[in-house]
Amino acid sequence: MAATELERFSNEEKRNLALGGHVGFDSLPDQLVSKSVAQGFSFNILCVGETGIGKSTLMNTLFNTTFETEEASHYEHAVRLRPRTYDLQESNVHLKLTIVDAVGFGDQINKDERPIVDYIDTQFENYLQEELKIRRSLFNYHDTRIHVCLYFITPTGHSLKSLDLVTMKKLDSKVNIIPIIAKADTISKSELHKFKIKIMSELVSNGVQIYQFPTDDDAVAEINSVMNAHLPFAVVGSTEEVKVGNKMVRARQYPWGVVQVENESHCDFVKLREMLIRVNMEDLREQTHTRHYELYRRCKLEEMGFKDTDPDSQPFSLQETYETKRKEFLCELQKKEEEMRQMFVNKVKETELELKEKERELHEKFEHLKRMHQEEKRKVEEKRRELEEEMNAFNRRKVAVETLQCQSLQATSQQPLKKDKDKKK
Ligand code: GTP
Ligand code: MG
Image (spheres, protein in one colour):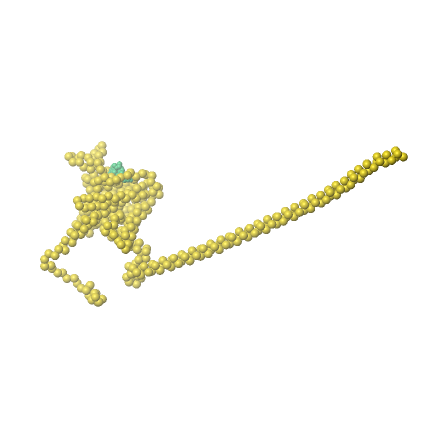
């Protein structure tokens, strides 16, 4: 099709046509539903809150089951993320639920939220890598991206801790945060009311973006906007069943009375379950994909050098980006190689200089030793000469003494002979 013809075609107004009878494409939504049901759903919850705040109990209460739990110790070296995946089924809907616990959060002296941020990013990265593969299998890919972060606030009745503010601020661009006041049965009604207002004003003044239940869909706009005003939800968790009237209900029993988990005048548990599971689960999944993952993907691709348009606002082709990036990479590689070569040459020069210095030192040492040796030799020679002279003198004296001895011997042996001669005369 010629370019002008194409343009005319796309600019042409779409006309409404009436159908003569039933065609069948009104079943598309049903087809979509049955396809989704067959495929199953995944939902991933991140629980952030200090050790023992009631995270596991609330999860068990929310899903009306008993997940594996393992009490965390207060002596973890660092915050550790512990994901556990379960297959749940309700009617014919399969849900692959992953609950991720931020174990040890709030216990470390070095209160670092980085492991949580890293974990969320890693899940985004895994998804991105799958998307970038030549042979993608996103259809049966186990999506581990975090859809919601339930942030458990300690019911102090005072204000948010700086750790809460810092952590939520770091997480708000990466995940949908729903703040909840845990163990709400430990705080009085009037204190709770003030605490909620305080928390919300602190979140606003610190620019923390928490998840807002969507109000753009008429079907849920009203309930969602009412519920937005109830945030943060004050919840109570319990897996115990207590008899109230003639019914067994989930509750916490105290000497002074019973706190019913599903009683809306006792706590906001029902509101949380309604909002999280029954009304907005799909929106949380969608927001994760279209907002948080999209942001991660955009930053990551830009970091890798991909752009939508070039400086002249012309569409950027993938091929061009690849070529530019390849050239940049090769230049970088060449620069690195040159640097390494220069470094090697410098190192060799340095070593050569060091060796020369060592050689000079050795030579000096050798010369010094040589001089010392000659001096020693000269002294020994001197000594030898002296000794020889002494020996000569000694020998001379010895010869003289021997001559004297000989002469005196001769003299003594001639004396009796003379006496005999004299007698004979
Ligand atoms: P770790 O995983 O070890 O960090 O603990 P956790 O946050 O999962 O807390 P868990 O659910 O194990 O509960 C710790 C204790 O708090 C248990 O004794 C629970 O019975 C109690 N608890 C849980 N929820 C509530 C609640 O809503 N109110 C009160 N008063 N106690 C609760
Ligand atoms: Mg737990």
